[in-house]
Length: 92
Image: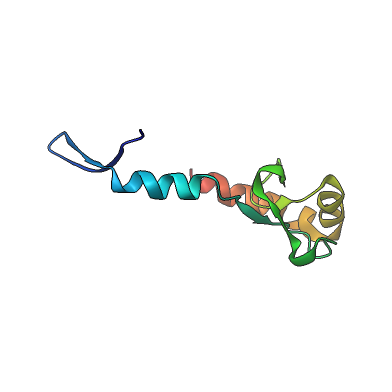
């Protein structure tokens, strides 16, 4: 049984078994992501998050396929990628 912590107070852990059921419920839910290519052919541009690709430069945009990544790169992401990368570095 997983016991999740509700909180700590003076280094004493407070267990909350009521969260175990909710955790099991949401653990199996597929995470959905949005392809950043506006010309993506997938309906609603949504796909399972774990199969998406991330721009390796800025790490701010995600794609459903290498084809969508390339189309978006040549379609305008190339011009803003470096700026987005610098913004990401500033927040670290």
